[in-house]
Length: 218
Length: 218
DNA sequence: CTTATTTTTTAGATTAGACTAAAAATAAAT
DNA sequence: ATTTATTTTTAGTCTAATCTAAAAAATAAG
Ligand SMILES: [Mn+2]
Ligand SMILES: [Mn+2]
Ligand SMILES: [Mn+2]
Ligand SMILES: [Mn+2]
Image (cartoon, rainbow over all chains, first blue to last red):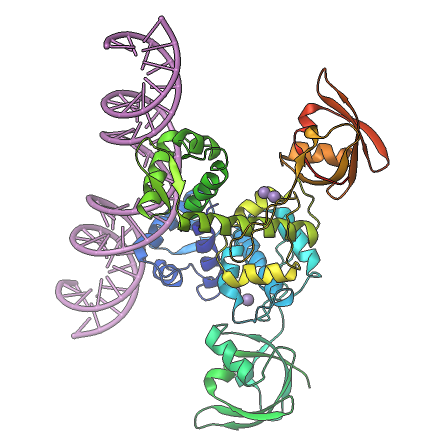
């Protein structure tokens, strides 16, 4: 399995949540930041290897093997991100690019030992679940902040957008995973929100509140 | 710089110790486990990028840049080997293949933080020196065991052959780096040696004694 | 100083992965 | 139901890295 093949599998895996009846060639090309013709080529190769099911013009679907392999790569990505934040002095906005490289290292023992070394973490620095050794992903119950009503609150447990820009914004305003948050007011004009995070009160724009996951605590 | 280019640079770097007046194409091909024609191709590419100096039929020599880059890769290789042994539960005969992959990860911060995390180690698990951040390699004074006279002794500090087979042999006979060793007798017929390692006495063949580095302590 | 051997380079093919441009299939709009 | 627009695939080119087979250069032998 080449690095490029693994990246395509991962892309298709993530896109399957949005495109349940087959992932279109264009969507894959866009996700991979390449051209549709290149995506078609790779789709054929992956299909040839029975990693995806594919009929021309019908979009791609991961097979059992394809999905299992994608999950393995995602497991490695998230374990490495955890390593970089927990053991080295990386912040959560710096880990993605490096993990994109590390996720392709091939060694069963390495990933097993890394997992042990980290104390079998359940989530990565962005709150995303780390698949276990058998590929099982323990889905975490979470709500987008913007769905909360005034008076409701909970704990920040993840980000939907994990771009460096968003993560840095959160750092700047002292919003981190594990912090408690409560909705004090909602502004219907622009969907902004007044919230209390820890001891601070602040106003969050719609763009922010639609990208922060909360575990509701009544 | 591609992965393949880095591996060729590393190969040439190591071969330059043996071939001081230019590394022959065949030597490179053999080291890289490839064909001479492939080596010629790569030599041209590296030469084009001014990483090696090359005139047809004259062999290859690393330029300043080429050498510096090779050293960086070696630094990463040895730091990763140290990580695998010191932090994860790898033994010294299991780390090389994984480090061959990890050494190509591109991130200045990663290698800097890893070095810090490991406590700025001076040598890798095989006793080889880890180049510092500036590419300086602190050569360690060491003698091949077979050169010692009867009565001389010292401390095991490195291996010349770091094949898994040799390392496992050493493990089996409880010879590890840091252990003291003393020559009790030499057999001129087959150049075998009677030595005391720790509390044990044992006979080492010529093949063993010519692949173990000792720091002499009088 | 020729001839033979070894070493190195060239020529031509192959594979993975990407691209551009054009054709073909599907979907959307009159 | 045609026409128009979008999506997808095909055809052909390119680069890095490899290979085999053959030619050319350098070395060694007689
Ligand atoms: Mn990531
Ligand atoms: Mn993540
Ligand atoms: Mn090694
Ligand atoms: Mn080593």
